[in-house]
Length: 85
Image 1 (cartoon, rainbow, N blue to C red):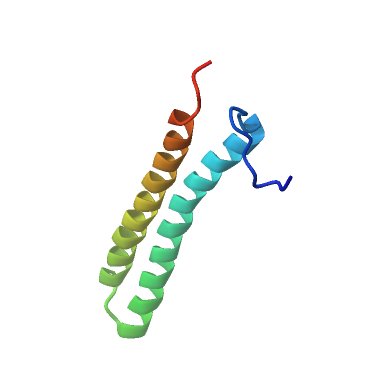
Image 2 (cartoon, rainbow, N blue to C red):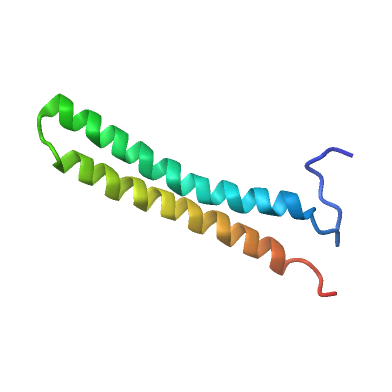
């Protein structure tokens, strides 16, 4: 049986669940840092400081939050599909 196969009624180990939550939180952080870095670089290139930095911050935060919400909804959906004990 492959590692990705799910067995019905069997809960994934706690470490895997913690890893999923950690991954979701890091997605938000990396998106914000990516938006800041891109905005900073474009500000230096175009001389528009600090406007593109702020736009990058807002876009990075929005994109990261969107990803965080999608991942959280997926985890919650997986939890709801489990049979009650």
